[in-house]
Length: 247
Image 1 (cartoon, rainbow, N blue to C red):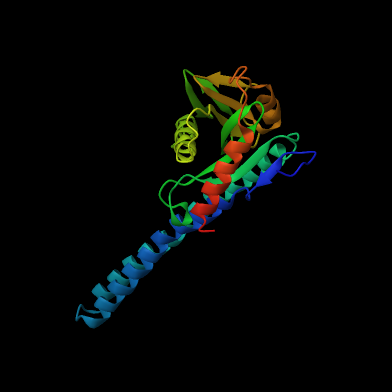
Image 2: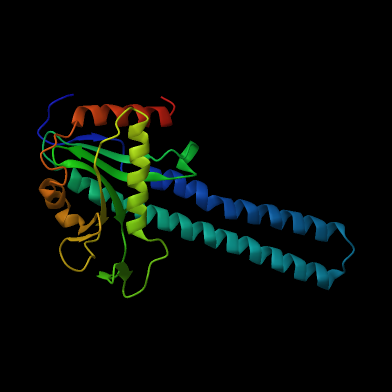
């Protein structure tokens, strides 16, 4: 492995969010376009009368507009998430030598990471192995009764569960390379520093803002006196990432 003053970076932050986001967002528009074309063609080919044909075409246009709006909204959400991953990536780039950072690591979902998505960031270094679930949320994020709330409201997707799922996916990938004993620490990081408080731990999940992420990673010592096999884990992740990309 090459020696540098800072962490070695693998992959591009936000790549998975953009690729999968566009793929997942565009299908409602394609479905709406197909439906609109079919309905308009059927209406023009049938003797429905001028008024009925007008109503049918109006409804078809509404369906098309809904598809456009849904596509726009979904792409915006995924690109906002990608921007948050870039913020976190800039923080992780300041990790010292001896650390490796993987961005947008495929969780085994196949083409365009469609089925299972990707892990936003994986950090491997002397202090341990971390999977980082990045959230770029607006509003104030607080921990209440074991749940993360945004302006007092429960989010649609639970980031704590997402981080734990990412840990399981990473351990499966490492297991395929013969690494079964790696302790992986789940982290939920808020790119906009919107988390109320400094750093928290809920169960086995670390919760922090992007501004405190380096402190959290460097201070973690959950593996105790056990030496982290950095080179072995990095080689396994490089091989798995290359295989998922067909390289």
